[in-house]
Length: 165
Image (tube, rainbow, N blue to C red; front, side):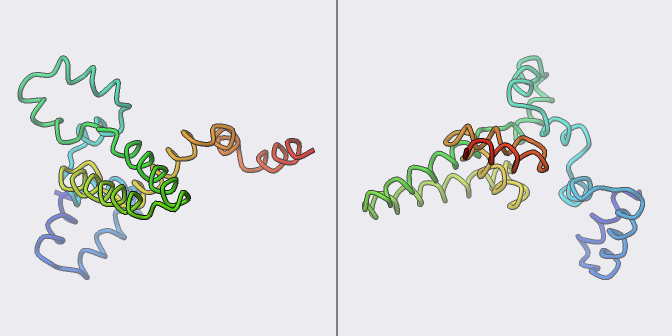
């Protein structure tokens, strides 16, 4: 019952009680992601499935019963972040080349992709999605920068100074 309290309060529009329940849950050791899952009605098994890398999700789906397939299908990773990252780079290249019409068309394609993914439940956190797209852009287009960013912060400056010498 306690885990469903924030969801019920959200549904009935009890903002003050909802805020109190969320504060209490956070003080008791709850995470933002856990609370978000509760608010969205996402069970723990689905949450764990969503966190798996795409190859592991595929392996599970290959062996899943029809009931499990229908349960997990909406949460399959579909590379929307990598597709979006590629479209961002394509649009920027078109803009840099002075081709505003192509850039606008690519941006529209990107908006349609994001709207469809959000509608299908593949994007539940805008901030997390945007962060993931940024990471994909760096990883795909600047691998040396991606490697530096994977270092602990205290070592990044040291590495960058060595590279500049």
